[in-house]
Length: 522
Image (cartoon, rainbow, N blue to C red):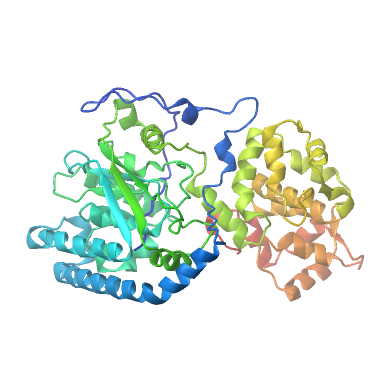
């Protein structure tokens, strides 16, 4: 089953979280605990900055566990797969019967009624049974509120494709689903999901209106179910909640999901085992535990109703306290940034979000320090770029005692060279962050200095300059270089390069913003 997704609308009022006011129907909500609400002091960031929530390492070095997995792959896995398929086929058949004669527009504009609605019960039972056949033992704590009490269910942490079981456990509540997942099939269609295209701002505005309309509708719609983190994490912290679930300003019910297993075979993140590996390892476990806890309904204050981000922040604080984990500054956009850096072939993609946060903590971002270093250096070589930590701190004008500076250095360490980093790699990533959402040509100008000598590059260095920005063939690169170097000097500067591409389609590509939302090279 596919997990649901969340997003952030294009415009949202800004405000810092405040202590939660008393709410009708519940005891006064406690303020955020000190460990969660703690701010960085003495220029040192909160420790959660150093625990990347998008990375999961599934260590598998126990020979007994390997032998058990091999045995159960032969004995248990086929049996489970057959049972899962039987349950899914029955659920799919019920969904086809219940949706017969209904169009996509019917599902989007009016709730199911009569016998179609009553069919949700057995359909949900068979879908949930498929998870049980996979070895998932579900423990439910607390009571699910009715739609009248809480039109919206907010579920966190979101960490696994198994999280989709919550849709069926809650009686086919309506999930928020990526537009790309429209073809998931009748089992999702029956839940009457709300679709959103993360990359299309018009779709986001339409979707937020649909959430508001459904949440405040007098009709008997299912509860809306949203994973406000917007992406899967490793459950070490709660990343920032997107405010979509909180725009209607209605009461919500927080729902917690835990997987208290000795071996974590379910966590599916940006970096780590893929879905097939996790599914195999999960299906070859004797038992996989899942705990679902329904917290008391959260009634927003007037300030929270007026400010969805404030509402989201306060609910996140409450859920983090209940989970006994910290909150973090990571967002879904950080995950997109890491994906983009990986796709375009830059080094240390898993560290890029951390580097950005640590630069801000160290107040480097405000000084544009790396651009000045690049512009002032005649040439970067191994001799002046392979740096120890004290050398790095001196080069960056950082206090060697600062924890954040130490962590920044260690983000760039490679296993084969544990005592030094390549300063050029750091500068490349820093320049990328500096020019984020700015025309790529600004990045190019800095890279002429990073890869060249006195701001002049040869053919190989020109390729290094462009390889992370655009797709370009060797033939096209040679043609541009020859045109930019009429005197056959063997090197060109930035102004010669720009002049040579004045009538080349490459110029239009480099005039576009350095935007990770595009995810791939243009």
